[in-house]
Image (cartoon, rainbow over all chains, first blue to last red; front, side):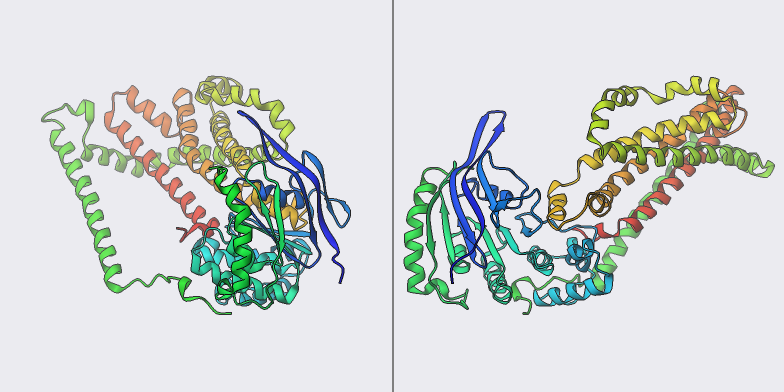
Amino acid sequence: MTPVPLIEYRDIARRFTTRRGTVTACEHVDLTVNEGEFLAIVGPSGCGKSTLLNMAAGLLQPSAGGVFYRGEKVPEPNTRVGYMTQRDTLLPWRSVEDNVAIALELRGQDRPTRLRTAHEWLHRVGLKGFENAYPAQLSGGMRRRVSMARTLAYEPETILMDEPFGALDAQLRLVMHDELLKLWAATRTTMVFVTHDLTEAITLADRVAVFSARPGRIRAIETVDLPRPRDVFRIRFDPRFGELHDRLWGYLEESVREGVMV
Amino acid sequence: MTMSPTEAIEAPRIGHDVLASARAEWFKVLAWRVGITVVGLALWETASGRLIKPFWISAPSAIWAQLYAWVESGDLWMHMRITLTETVAGFVLGAVSGIAFGLALGLNKRLAAVLDPFIIAFYSLPKIALAPLFILWFGVGLASKIVLATFVVFFLVFYNTYAGTLAVEQELVDVLRLMGATRWQIVRKVILPSVLLWIFTGMKISVPYALIGAVVGEMMASNKGLGYLIQASAGQYDTSGVFAALFVLMIIATGLHEILKQSERVMLRWKEDST
């Protein structure tokens, strides 16, 4: 099966102008995301990983180079991608079910139909019984589940995730990884997952791209040869996992030592 | 998929003892409030005529008598109605126009940029200083007071509404844009609900100002209303009358504030239980 390129970054750079001068978030980035794959981007914080996602979403334009979606320049905004950001973007004045159903609502689906879909997804992420709660009444982990359900419920062609579980504790993250992989296995949506956690990246992804510290460049891209379905709770102890982890950590370590932007 | 034990929700399981102690605490607070009121009034009553001449501070009993007399004669009701009409009319007109203008500017950056210096200029102006002008233009009747109250409320509500549109979280807007929302859908589903909180704040703080607008207008030129009552009583060196009118004003202001607070609670139900 030949991979079909879906998102292509062609020699892109992004610079931001601040009061203290120009900051280069990333430069000379060439990266292709293939249809149906789970790609993880790992790098130290502040290396411009999120910038890449924002560009794929059409929320940000590259300063140089081009970003393409299915061979065409990414539209502003790119409505074919779903975006799950690091911060909560649930609408606090909407109940959980109305949050999950919002994309369907925007598409003009009638309320009973869209709520049925929303309930199905809430059930899948283990939030049955919380349909009428407001986001402020939920724990951080539960809010993440709602965000996940909201992103998956309208079935976007590609899903971008920016450190979606960064704020959760280690055990809860494993649980979320398990759920995410199960949900993903059913849909095989193209995934671009940004994280600073190498273990998380290897656990989830088909391919891992390692980013250097700012200005971000790609240091290495490796294929994760671990069979699916994966047991996220145990896969860390697989020797192949350890090998890959060591190799990728080699690239990442340099970047981290070079100085992480605080 | 089931809930993981690590994040089973902590449902608020309030025991009876917790509820009981909360109630006991509330009673204690209430007892203190009643105590302060009683002691304060008693001290006032005692001091009046013994330590300080009633001419300066009147006395609770005298104020009560005055209120009673006004109720009997029907004067109180008439003056109150006038002031309330002016306040409420000014409040409603000011709030509606303030919200409309605030949203218009918030959603139209160019218009906002163009009008910015004018808005700042008018905003900095003490609105009460316009009272003589309005009395000149609209006469000594209700209209001039309504216009003054409207003007004061308008700026407060407008400014809050406008600031609210600027404070809308861009991330929320972006997420909806990616879902394919139209401009109008973003306005309806993100901007308006998040501005609502700011609008309410603006309305809540402007209630006392609406009253100030009405009362100041009455004090300057009128023959009706609580402001007039204060002015007329003071003119006759009737301290009890001044205090009685002030007391009624206080009740009205508190009542208006309470009404708004309750309606806010209904409209912003999602904010409850937030941590």
